[in-house]
Image (cartoon, rainbow, N blue to C red; front, side):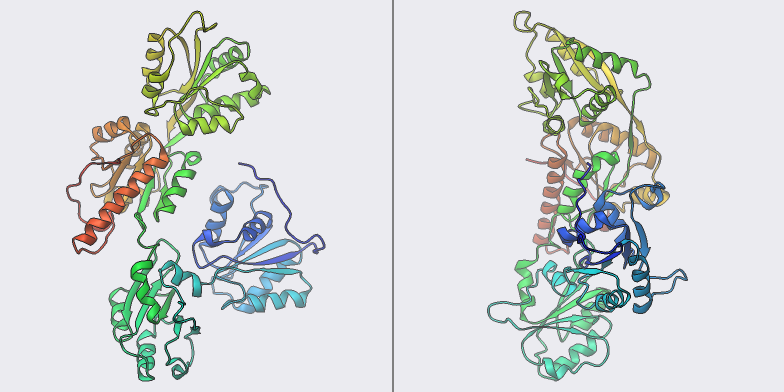
Length: 550
């Protein structure tokens, strides 16, 4: 989708300009709207951590680094964390990099957290001011507040509104924090034992609650809840490592009822999405909403038909009024016809007087995006069978034309054609696009599929099952298998896969919802049995029930 480009840099800005942008502590959804607008305009993005570049590329719909095309609109990415010699940059060296680029181009200096809170933003901004480079500050969400919030730990309550943030590097006078205020400790992982002892020695009760949250706001987030007396041992047992934020105080007890992020039904699940790249966006977004970590592995490539003449003839027939109906059985079919229209310089007006059928709501939405409205969408099952259930028989009095244009994939089944013929219609069954098997994924991905490192895989068609098994091998027995419909379930079982989740209707959103319901039920069962909550990839294979969403 092409977005209109808006100018947000001040009109009176010099040729060069630096925007110091807070990115939050990890979750890209914490970026502000202003930050996203500036990233769209940026000529240079100076990053701070390795995750920044892929985050920006994903956010803006840019190609992966290895797929960049020379002369494209992708901004230049500059590593602000390390120099060309591979050594970490000092604040001064990083400021020189920012100023050098900022003198000539629009720069976004992307920073973890907030640029002016426990960051090098002030020093770098001063360097810009000294060099005469214009700049602005776009605040971000600090780890000091965001990480406890994602852990379900409020920093203040009506009973206690005093909060103090302490950076634990160097000498800290812990006698200043012996009261009952809430403490947020940064850079405290390595010295938490000494810190806890000092707080107790200066009057804090040994039973004071403590929460340590590692890599907060990401789907790898882990929280250990303990007390000042035991936090050092509990953190070692959980192998807690930086970066982590520690909260000390009675507010930690509220996590038991307010934990919302780590309790998401698919939290931390690595989910394989074997789809075309073009189709994966909405599915992966919904999976992330449930806390999953989607891993897109293209198994199908959508390509034009080998012989375009049949499609050309059908489109000409559509314009000339040869058809009474056009039936779209997929979003890809809508896309193929639309591209052919654009090739001929046609638009939606050519559909005047033509009835339009869509196999389901997603296909109907793709038609609506073209400025058209589907006259027929199945009232029941959203499939070819459901479409036939509602399709009217041909009536030689009411229907002036008895022909249907059916643009489809080369591997589509003949059931719809046969059903329409039984209803008295003639069909032009036209190959609008081909689905071909994609190249195999990298070796580490193939190993992860076969060895059970994925927690779940979602299959959205029979062809994704066949192609994934063909290019990468069969998923491990411990991997949860979720499928979009009965036909896909049958194909999965034919390939030796045990289906765990079946969507109530053939819809990708409902498929993800059904997988989330499965994850929530699984989590609840473990808690009820007094077991630790683990992911499927962390358990040995066991008998699993086939779960059909209600």
